[in-house]
Structures are given as structure tokens and as C-alpha cells.
Amino acid sequence: MGRAQQKLCRMLNMKLADYVIEYLIELGVKQVFLVYGAAIGDLVDYFTKTDRIKYLCVMHEQAGAFAAETLTKVSGELGVTMVTSGPGGTNLLTGIANCWYDSIPNLYITGQIHSQFLRKDPSIRQVGFQENDIVSMAEPITKFATMVTDPNKIKWALDKAVYEATAAEATESGGGDEGGREERDQETAGHSVSVL
Image (tube, rainbow, N blue to C red; front, side, top):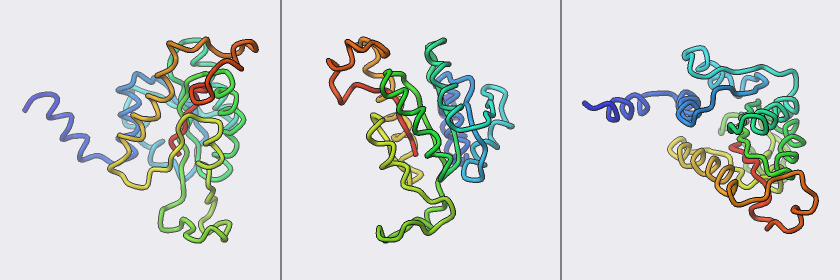
């Protein structure tokens, strides 16, 4: 069996959370900023099983978003932030918006409650603990926001998020300049991306 086949077999037998971290490693991500919560516990657990990527705990989700943005500005690497569900995701929104306005490519991953507890009736505010429709909150300030409910779609969602975050980078004038902002097409104006 060749190396590529061995890798595929290994990935088919791993937990989804482990796959996400391996995906980031393959992308070349060296560090992830995070605030721990039970909804991302399995993701955080995989960091203890590898030395190819590390996580840096920050004291607040907004600080994680700004740290990831700064990493991208300084190094050119894709900044990644992971936080838990509910208020963890809402606390990211200011940092996400900042990346959107300045066209900085970042990836944000939030946890979510177990799918069996997601509200089925939109007239109900919340069923599960810390349930929140973070996708609809993040959509106006990202190029792509989704909640992955089918494990078979995680690769597609991550590929799409990374593509959307980085694809227009070479053609845009960059962020921070007031003169160029109005001229940019709204569809390609920001790079912040969420996989929620």
C-alpha cells in the first residue's frame, strides 16, 4: 500500500475532530488561537496527540480573533481561531468584522450543541444549552459561513472556507485604505470566513 493510500485509510478511521486538526496541519497552520469550551473539547483533545500544531489559549474570544488577524498581517499565514458554542461564537463577531473590513484571510471554527438539541421551530429561541444561530450572525461579515451537520461534508466545507478566504487575495488592493474600500466589489470585499 502506497503512502497516499495509507494516509487515506488512516483519515477514514479517525474522528471528525481529529480530521479537522489534520486538515489544518496539511494546510501549514502552525498555531490556533482558542478559548476552550465543551463544544470544541474533541478538537482541543487532538492537539495533545501531535506536535505538528499547537494551540494558544487566549482569555477572550475577541482576543483570539484579533490575535489570528495579527498573525496573518505579520506572517502571511492563515489565522485560525476556535471557540465554543453560544457566547463563544458571538464574542468573535467584532474580530470577524475587522478582518472583513480590512480583507484579512482568517478561518473561524466554533462548536455547536449536539444536533439532536437544535431547535426545529424558529419561534422558539433556544432548545439546547448555548444554542445560537451564529451562521446568520456571521454571514453578513464573511465570504462563507456554514454549520456542518453531515460529517461527510466537512472536507467540502473546509476547502470552501479556505478557498473563499484566500482566493481573491492576489487581486485585491488590500485592506485598511479608505480610498480602495468603496471600489471593491461587495462579494469579494472581505476575507474572514467561518465554518460554524
